[in-house]
Amino acid sequence: MQDDKFFVVGQVLKPKGLDGQIKIKPFSQDLTQFLSLKSVYIDGEEIKIKKASVSNSFVFLLLENINSAEQAERLKNKSIAVKKNTAALADDEFYIADLLDCDFSSGDLSGKIVNIHQFGSADVFEIILNDGRQIMFPHLTALSLKFDKQLKRVSVDFDLLQKVVVFN
Image 1 (cartoon, rainbow, N blue to C red):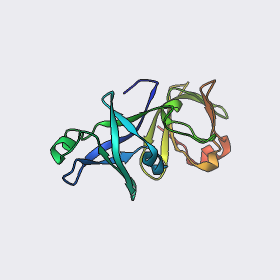
Image 2: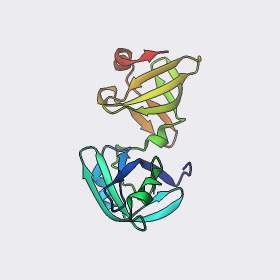
Image 3: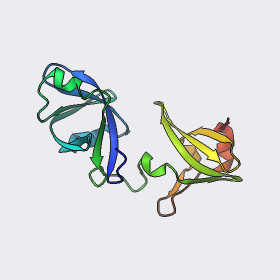
Image 4: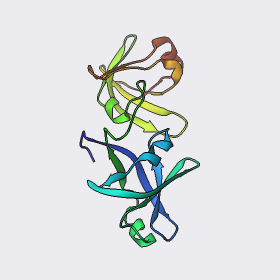
């Protein structure tokens, strides 16, 4: 779902149980946000949530009109989205989708953010520099990431970046 009004918050992994509940891999650190959602969007269709729970690092949803494991199985690998104004963010938080295609700078390095990989312990930024080289680095608090949403610009501390950056 590439619509600017929506934000992908997870992916359906598989059914859980026989009642149609689905197991979600969340794309957010704050799993409790799922507990306050009234509905989600799958393939652009709004589906009401009957029940939501969180266990370990997964979210479990029971959706309206999904009443069996067979129906839930048809949702496997589908994206779960919400309207952007539904997913509340703190002032210092942002959507990964908002960072993609932003200008990037750190010291004498500049380029574009082309991808943000979610491997588990830390998101990994992939940048194509203006000179054609590619760099990757983990999103660490110590890097003091600054995001100017209006200018679509991201910057990080150059000295600390030098300790963790990988050039490809």
